[in-house]
Image (cartoon, rainbow, N blue to C red; front, side, top):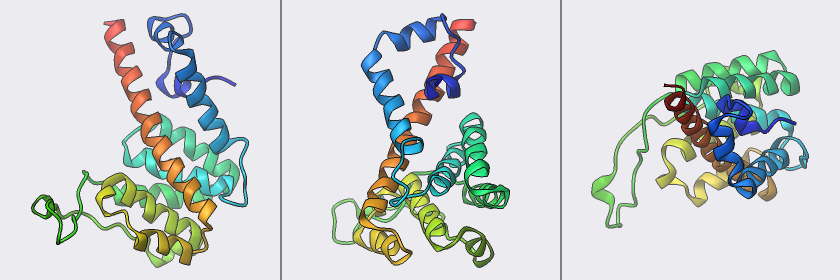
Amino acid sequence: MTDIIDRLAGVTPGGTVDALRRHRPATRDNAQASYHALFENIEAASATLAERAAVAQFVAILHDDEVAAAHYAALTRESGGEALERAVTELAEAGRTEGPYGEYPAEGPLVGESVAGLRFAVDDHAREILGERTAASLEHAHLLVFRPRESSVAALTALGAAGWSTDGIVTLSQLVSFLAFQLRVAAGLRLLDTEDAA
């Protein structure tokens, strides 16, 4: 399979950016292996492909990455159907904001740096389409993208109450973390490719 970061970044085989990526083969291969583990050779008991794809689509839209959003939206449609893909798109559009922001603990030294912002919640109509697990996963993904300072036992407990197992919660956290890396690398490579072309 074509390297996913090359695909999302539009890397031209044989070009300068391609050569740059191939200069660090272990880094390139490990990133591809992570994608493979999260989206291809999966353990569906912890998180189904449709759940993973929906979270990835949601996070890509939050990051304003149209190429990655289209890629993961297609995966959502293939694995979970058009209604799921449309619902995720609408929720992500409603959840767009700027960050990071959030509240630091009141007794901590950083409380003065707390910043208010959107507290994303899936509405009842969308929750019926998504199901409780996927709805909770999108709310948690939004928290990790924009309010990481508010990650807490309570946030993890909410996932458990929605039906996520411990393994599933770990998978979800790994997925959001991987996407943050993947999307930033792809965006950086696109920028390098544009500068190289100029």
